[in-house]
Length: 135
Image 1 (tube, one colour):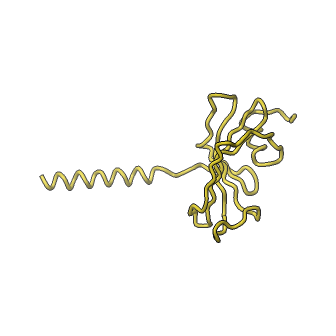
Image 2: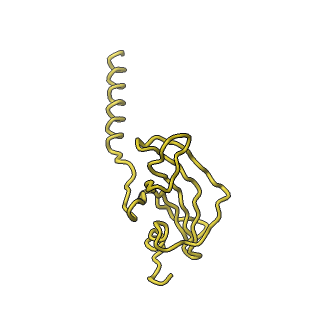
Image 3: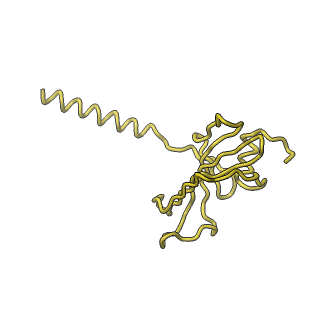
């Protein structure tokens, strides 16, 4: 009985190891010089013609240190309304250079604002919403 238990535990550990190795993590694609979108996070919204997605923005001097820790990048959860050409940010989490969580901001009162073309959000909106060349 003890041997069956050991074999079962070994098989469970082996399965967990294989499952962990099979997951490569997010599929980050470059949007511009310091912004990357997780293509696996892109989800169509039910309430509006739009999308939600995660955008990783690397710090190029725009983020101040938080509690004495330097911010390497910010991970934001965005929503785009394709018909109104607007977006909002619901969550902004900050991380240090080792990928450790530094600070988070959940803004449930975030409001949609116009997409600014030439920005990372504008580039993503143009791709996801299939806008023509006119703004």
